[in-house]
Image 1 (cartoon, rainbow, N blue to C red):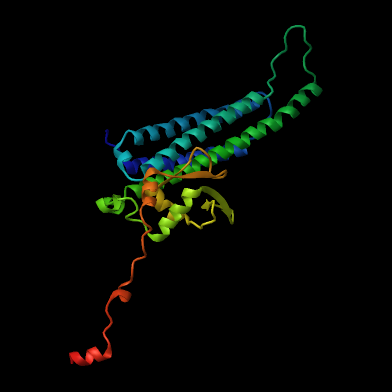
Image 2 (image 1 turned 90 degrees about the vertical axis):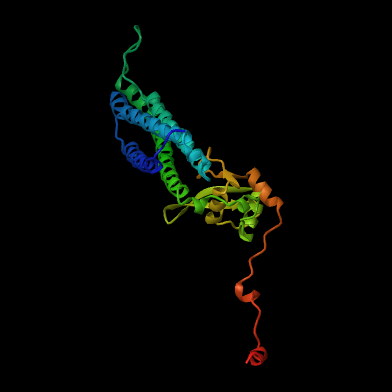
Amino acid sequence: MPSTDFNEQAHRLRQLAREFEALKARVHDVSYTPGTDALHRIGPLLLQTQDLTATAMACLTALDNSAYTHVAGSRASLDLLSSIVSSSSLAGTDLAHVLLANPYEGAQFAGYSADDEAVRAARHAEAIPKMRGHLNDAVHQLGLCVTGCHYVAHGITEDLAPAQDHKPSAKQQTAGASLSPAQYDALTALAVGGMLYESSTRGLGVTRVATQDGTRVSIATYRVLAKRSLVIADTGTSLLHGQRITVTEAGQRALAEPRPRAALSTASTAPKVTAAAQGVRR
């Protein structure tokens, strides 16, 4: 596999997030008059979206063709990066639909009368809501790209921490050997059914986990399980709609093991020395 500077890839993704953010703001704030003016103002936004899609695709290809695929947790990053390519492409499609809904001012076929002001105003009134709807959809997709790029960049940084922090030992590779009781219970609940979703807290998007049986699973616990490839979320859907969580084959093997017991503290296992015994020693 070709040598890849993973820190450079993480930096590139953070830069890509800033570019998606800037484009999102431009699409959100674009001002136009239906017709030629709309084409001149929205056309460049479509072309820039296509450029960013190509950049995201290049990042995905570079990481997929590198030794990063051997790093624990890399699959989740690659899945998320592919969803960024998809969301960016959908944003481009939304902008193309804006141009499709745009009422152009070309001449009619011979024999047809030219549009008067009333007809022209009616065409514009019909087109504007459609155009605005497609622009709003593009803004939403670009927002997903921004969030996704930040998550992937952070994931790469975490995945490339010292190997001893992330590579399981031979004992840990045995299904369930490294799980705590709380992690085992969380995995059990997710096997019944679970969703990863984004909720709004004080205006900020917060990722949470919901389980079908009502068991509370923290996002930190979920990320530990995902990092160990015991669970995986369907990144083909957005967090706003909820991503279905699936327990992997490795997770199923972990559940086949007995539930781990909580470790006894040193204080509870150490033999107590009574006062009488101390007297004997003296």
